[in-house]
Image 1 (cartoon, rainbow, N blue to C red):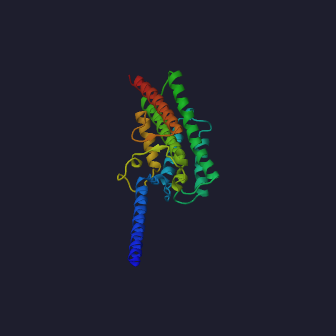
Image 2 (image 1 turned 120 degrees about the vertical axis):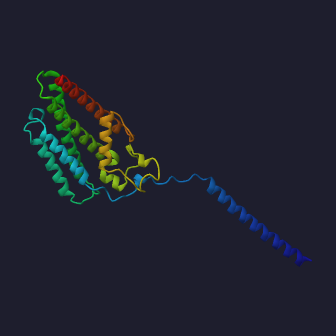
Image 3 (image 1 turned 90 degrees about the horizontal axis):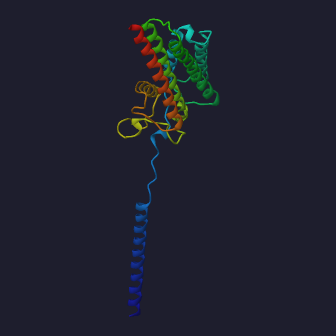
Length: 259
């Protein structure tokens, strides 16, 4: 009889241990289900190869060409000084980083890149101010076609200049975007809002920023890409204002000449 009781006691103890272990595993499972899921790493934090430099280089050369085509009365003298400086800065960037892709950064490269965009903006801003002043204070005007051509060159260079600013500042610039170092984007592109409409790991390149600048200059407001940071909103507001003033004054004077 005592042996039977001992055997029953051991069986009950073993069954109790199994039940306790099962309950413990069930509780752990419930805790895992109730625990908040860790957020997935956003696509813009991924490390990529970096974009190629040909598109932005072509845009800079186009801006230089447009500035050289402007009448000398609208440019800083000597006429060739700022376009030559822009070409020199572009050559320096290529020499210091000769790779096809923009995936390396340094303080010197960053300063040279920003200086290049600043010079382009300075030259075009000067031309825009001179053009507006001439349209307001000068009664004698060139022909309508010449005026539209000059205004169109200033307007197009304005688009290129602001597209370069967007490209340089969004998430720290192209090299920083390739390394995925910034936590939050400055521009929200449609491909970043919905999965399945772009390749995994998609990130904007210079043509995307050129499109943003062009649509902002035409619509005088954001279209499909939204600015998120304060500086992005201020830049887009400034570009819209410059574009609006240029288009309204040039078109109004051209229509007056034709009449």
